[in-house]
Image 1 (cartoon, helix red, strand yellow):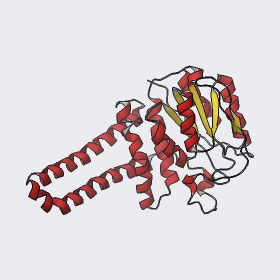
Image 2: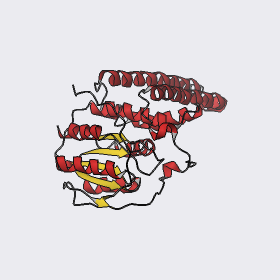
Image 3: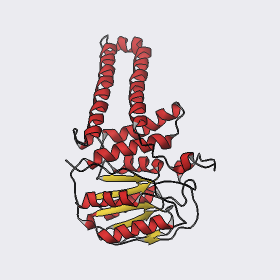
Image 4: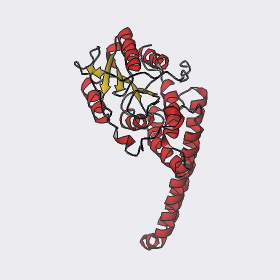
Length: 288
């Protein structure tokens, strides 16, 4: 069994950042690109400029929001499907009288299997064991529920950042349970342009210490492109909760990823901080 996933602790913020450009695939080394302005990512289009909740630190210490909102979301999907079947049943019965009952049975099976799946994911999380194949857990089905949980949370008045943080914790615990290791030149560290100088310097120091390439992605599209071009076999990614959920949804189904969320003391996309000790543990996990 893998060692337990380290707990995230607050890190102190510091001033603005620098960042990176890329060598050939699977070659270690640091990539530097300068970014000085504050440009909000599209995930923050709704930000009103006010300070973020809890000083931009969404580490709730509990994953209850993910479990609750995912369960409610899956049941809502089943309920909406049942309503749709009910409304269409008269016309479907004209095609064949067995179609409506067959659809009701399929919908009931979906609801039951969804709850069974979520229960097995919960046991995997609690025991630090990979009980399901990757495609039925953090490399597949789990990724489909990340946005579902945050959308349901918003229906109950919970801002998505809190739910997204809980979802990333669940994802990381399941990803950590997989025994997977790579060489240093097969691992890529992805970081955003909005890190503080102190945080960026810390990440670069870790990258140098373990001879791992680090790339500063100014936007999600560029991050996906550098993964395609460099073809790493594993990624340690740093992002805010919103970008992390989006990135995991796009990438984690294709290669192993551990995701470290940031703290945003000055709002989104500026002077972000992170727990460097946890980042180093993530790197060491893949290089073990």
